[in-house]
Length: 438
Image (cartoon, rainbow, N blue to C red; front, side, top):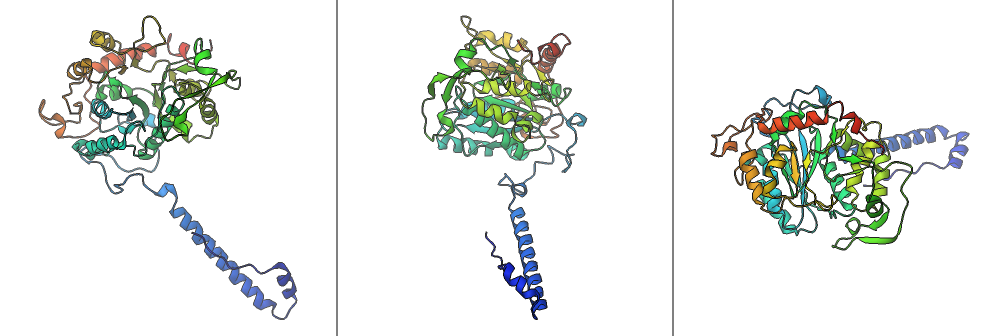
């Protein structure tokens, strides 16, 4: 909206009028004009502030509140309490991503990782038709606990995410930014894809993480580049997911570029568990390093594997907060440790005893997932994993009746995860593996 302001009298007219008989009348007129201008400016400022994004809500259900039975003691607060002083279990923000025909896999992964304290953002990329996105949203709305906790959302305007390009960084940061707006109460961010699955319950994970500093980051990283220099760092690409509406192939330039000397590249895995502090730093922080690296990696193959490790290890604020393990179980081809392979039932005991919180490389409806549900998570098909917040009868819709979400009931998975983290934090491992320059 544009506001018209009265014209200010010209300087020559004002000067002439100073010595004229009507100078006092013109002075009064000038004061009136200035008052009108100031009043109009003040009204304009108030109007603009009323349209500020900080006063608008991302939720369509502006007045909705989570079920008080889940959060009986939660009071609204406008001051940020240091997370290390919190007596409440931590909260995790999950971005669960998939592509065409992955609706069923995303729902299964959501059920397997669900807890009322967490936040969940589901993303079907633009390779999936809009009908799948609508189907996913309708499925979410039909689950009572999701409606009660108000912690599951679906991205309506999807992104392209080419795993071998740089659009995966854009999609990840987009999801993280939405999660920052949706809730102020989560502590860690985890980006899962449809081929991932948990190896512990959320009660196990939240219980163990409640004993950790909230600024810890679990990120695989190394400065040893090796074969990646020629295949992933020097090549120049153009990712169509950043600028085209339709699917296209990644373009590889004939020229290659030298490695940077303004910062050091660290590489790792596309999966990581990072703190809210780091996400704030990447999206809202005043340090320009995250944006510099974002611009650099925009033309780099498989750039998501480099982004978080490089930010952490080039920052004094975060290079002492990183644990050099992402708590994910991955299997590689024996002939080449560069190529990840799919998991099968024969590796069930190996992956469970690894102490990892997640595993990756599961095909659709892999029978080993049913075994994980039954023996590890205690989950029935089409239902969430029972936790301390579930008050129903065992084996009969246990979570159809719920109570305080802060009540955790950790199981054997917590002991396995605790053992693995203790090993990673031991004096001979933790500091000696942080951002080492090789």
